[in-house]
Amino acid sequence: MRSTKRLNEIRKLPCVRCGQSPSQAAHSNSSKHGKGRGIKASDEFTVPLCYACHSAFDQFKLGNRQESEAMFDVWLEKTERMLNLKDQDDVF
Image 1 (cartoon, rainbow, N blue to C red):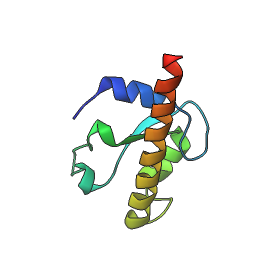
Image 2 (cartoon, helix red, strand yellow):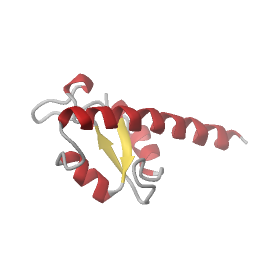
Image 3 (cartoon, rainbow, N blue to C red):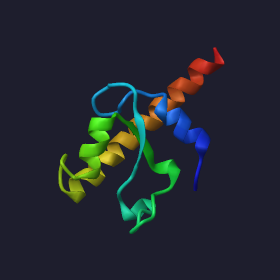
């Protein structure tokens, strides 16, 4: 699934790891999210990461594959909460 709207909303959020801005829409590196050789995971599995954190994540400098997947799952939950809060702010 590709969603320009979601990617743009993700990029508006601060880095989910360190809080810096600007951030990039970082896709999951896990096959359980559709990642494959030469294939990005679905856009629904993206989190905001600054350039430095995104680079470290993609190069597995933050932990091994299993640790990275666990970190990403936590970041994804946090990202969904951040997006929901942002949506609520837009209503008021």
